[in-house]
Image (cartoon, rainbow, N blue to C red; front, side, top):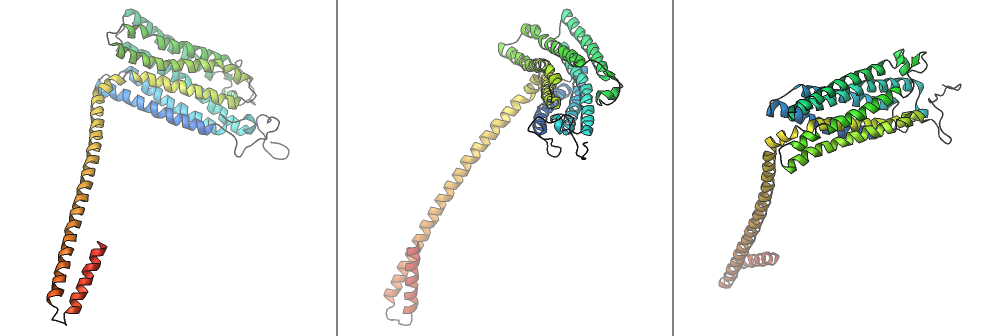
Length: 369
């Protein structure tokens, strides 16, 4: 707060700009759109996986439970990121009041505490899923359980480092508190490097087993495509690690960190989708033919309805022409009868106005037709 009573930002604005605390520039709208779209696909994927394992294959297991836990953590992670975006993340530092900075920084720390177990549970779900679907050999089983062990231990260590990064803990989000913290970047580089290595491990581990499966080339290609999607996860984690130095060198870290959040949410969303895709074949085998037949039925019904409507319109048109033709014949007959009456009743002068009037009416109606 300045001597004039006006609030000031965490950092001074660059030359030519002014602090804006009323309607600041943010990335919140684009973040909301990203979260909405990605959560839709993640929810759909997790729903299909759990439904398939529960009602089709009847093989719900610990890997599915880990997937559900990861999904709940993902919802929490997204909620915290969006809440953080209201105060801090995706704002320019000079547009952030100190009170909002404290609150937003606390939410950012909480997202880190959720992100680490989220990443761990997602990868553990994948590893245990591999153990069930590929029927691995003794060597493969040993590698999988070794991966489970190292991922569990290292992510536990990273989470402990994150919680105890500063003493007292609240100094992590409030720089005015006296205390000590680990050097900047220690946790970011450690977790980022292990994320990349573990992502590559989870991605490459099943490829030899997939290649040895006794199946057609097309089916093998579909499974490999799933792991191709997992390659995006690796790219996201590598990109985030490569850009980590920018977050510590930037003079507008709150704005730059929002880009890191985008990489993180894409990494977690796609990783959880990949963890579910291997359950899709059983779901498609059960409902795929039915859905295709139903779509064809709807298409045929729509075509039949269109043809029927055209036939009805044609019949209505022909009936209308027939009625018009019959109506014209009746009027011609009435006209002829009226003419005969006029001819044969010339001696009855009292009836002439009536006949004459009828003749004119018939003539007028005929001209209209």
